[in-house]
Each structure stands twice: as C-alpha cells, then as structure tokens.
Amino acid sequence: MESLLAVDLGLKTGLALYGRDGRLCWYRSKNFGSAASLRRGVNTLLNSLPDLLFLVLEGSGPLALIWQREAGRRKIPVIQINAEKWRQKLLYPREQVTGPKAKHHADDPARRIIIWSGLSRPTSVRHDTAEAILVGFWAVMDVRWLKNIPRELRR
Image (cartoon, rainbow, N blue to C red; front, top):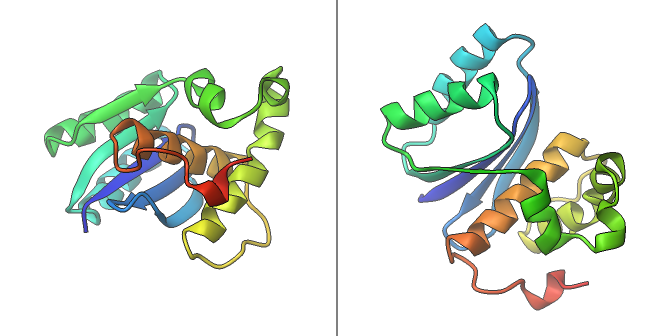
C-alpha cells in the first residue's frame, strides 16, 4: 500500500501513517529514549513500510538527520516543515498564539481525522501523536492526495 509517514520529531516521537486515499491508517507515539535507540527504531520502522512514498518531518536538528539518512538510503523523498506551516492551514490564528496553546488545540482536529478515517475512537491522544496526525494531514493535501479538506473535517 502506497503511504506517507508523518513524524513529530523527538526522542518521544509522534507517528502517523496515511494511505494514498488521504486517510489515516494508524497513529502512535514511541519513546525511543536515546539517539542510538532512535537510529535502530527508524531503520526497523522504515523497513516495515516498503511502499512508503513520502516521509514528512516536523522539526530539525540531529534527530532529523537520523530520519533523513535512513530515508535517503531507501530513496524516499523527505518533506521537512516547521510547526507554523501546518498550523496556519489547520488551526485558527487564536489557537496558535503560543506553542503550548497550539499543542492543546491539535487534539480536536486530530480526533476528527481519526474518526473520519474510520479508526476507532481514541481514549487519549498524546500531543506529539496529535501533531503527527496533523502534520500528515497537511502533507496529504500538499502532495495532492487530497485536494481539499473534506466537508466532515471543516470547522
């Protein structure tokens, strides 16, 4: 299955996998604990996604280099963005006044994407996972897998 993986960078990493239809396939949070563990984990994760067409990273720095290196070895294009880029498209201006406020407001649209995608309702969504879901949703629109925000997700 052709897919796009969105990553909210950190040792505590948010992950969201989208299918070619623009819907979320799965989402999770992973605490790698160390850069060495992250290196091994990225290798294992990318090996498990043989039809990955895009890797989308929110953030930069040494941890981003680990993801970029592994994606490069597999010839997977990497899209790297900062939080402000996807927040402008998916959150109201009043919801993104500060970083903590934006993280708080990422929960509701992430939950709506989960439900719209046909996945079971989550009991809780960590902020890194919610942000990965929104990064991925921004990306599926950016690569034109979805042309517009579906009516069910508009606010």
